[in-house]
Image (cartoon, rainbow, N blue to C red):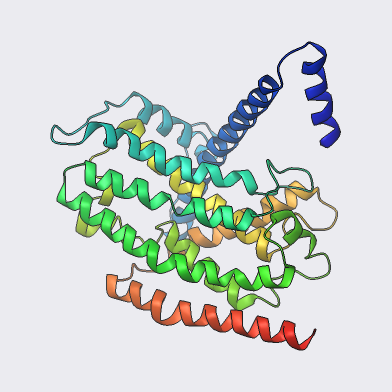
Length: 338
């Protein structure tokens, strides 16, 4: 990869082009590639979740559009949302209303920078990769609050404030749950964390931390049984009730992109990343990531939604103490082992 980059920059330098031109060109190319990957992955996950929910409910799901098991249903839905009328409420703050879905998607999109799909398949191996993920993922709630507040709708505001409370509640145990992995590796680099799992995946010594992370990640994605911000039965559709067309589609795109991102982070931290026999590294990474996504979908169509008080009790009274206990035991074991 480094040799390819040297040749790429060398070709522009030979033409006398300023160094900023190849840098911008490379950034645009990577951004387009990641956007295409996220778009295709999200369309697959939407179709996949429909089929999973259909099997759980003993029905077929999409079968007609595109032929084999309705594989093109997500494409048809995307075209439908693209041509639907974009409506902005008369009393809404139009600028913030339009900016909110962009902020939500940008926060999910930026985290893909530090996901290591393979030994050399990473946009940037930051030495503070885990810290970058924690910081950038927290910005999603800002876009959600912007959407709820700018809609000038009391149900949207309630959904947005619920999301803020939920994010604060579950961000803390999520961060503490991964400190055990960082303590074992001694680095925040995602690549070094994968390399440290050569002999044993961290899900074995950090199984409690993995369960806490997965639970908090599901809550971060606002998925059942933690879909309190949306809560269709109470708030119509939550913070995005006033959105239609492609603006609504961007929120939907961000939710599934966030699902892939938190599953990829869990794969990197606990499941050995790209490590595995026989198959190519990038394929192992995708298999593990989509397996975790399958678990999230399975839980969504199996469990009932929690009440708000149950949601807060689980985060503060159970997950957070367990996360600190896991961190303390990890530190004690490391000290005793020298």
